Image (cartoon, rainbow over all chains, first blue to last red; front, side):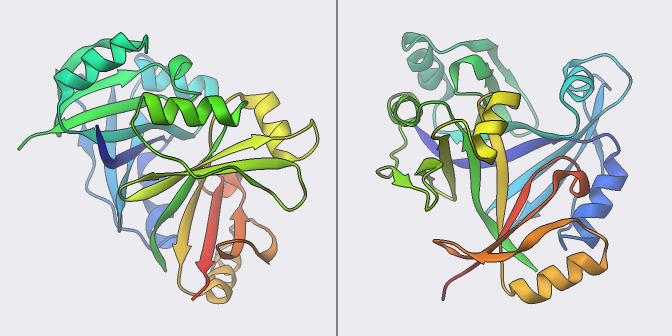
Length: 132
Length: 132
């Protein structure tokens, strides 16, 4: 059961330049950069009233985000929906034949998992069950 | 001044198949299909708690949406932000050198204009001033 959009992930080449665009052009503030655990990307959250844009800049040429940026360029990367119960959700998705990538893992926001765009009409989908 | 995300535009090949995916897999209801004025696409709105996904299917091979789908495949097409004052917004964007595509036009929701992804770190941006 999807509650709402949690955030949109957006790939950018230069996090500071992107933050400056959101601030000076769109008038939107963003958080200080946060490094991912594996050191392969840094991100910043832009608050927009009813949702959040997660700006994501790959560091180095390894990792999924670097490969995405190389292939597709800057822009939309994934949509994250908040769910109530990750275990029930993943079970239900698998029963419907939807391609779930790996198993849910614990992230900053809570338990998270991705669905391959092949099974979702073209969008990489993240599901998150937020920490209570 | 951006108030909030109004909707996300998503290109799909087959509107009914996409609506069925959102309904049966994500548990999200969508509106009955609406035809665009020029007859070149049909759309349906998926309500998701805090925002809306606008599913867009091109009809025929002409038009921007058909060309997008041919080039990029199904998936994210644009993000629409709600603004308070379109005239002031467009003036401010042009003064900052942001590429505004044409002039604002009256749509179903209100006055709307697009910003080229070249100037927005990779996302086609729509701005809408909603009818009061």
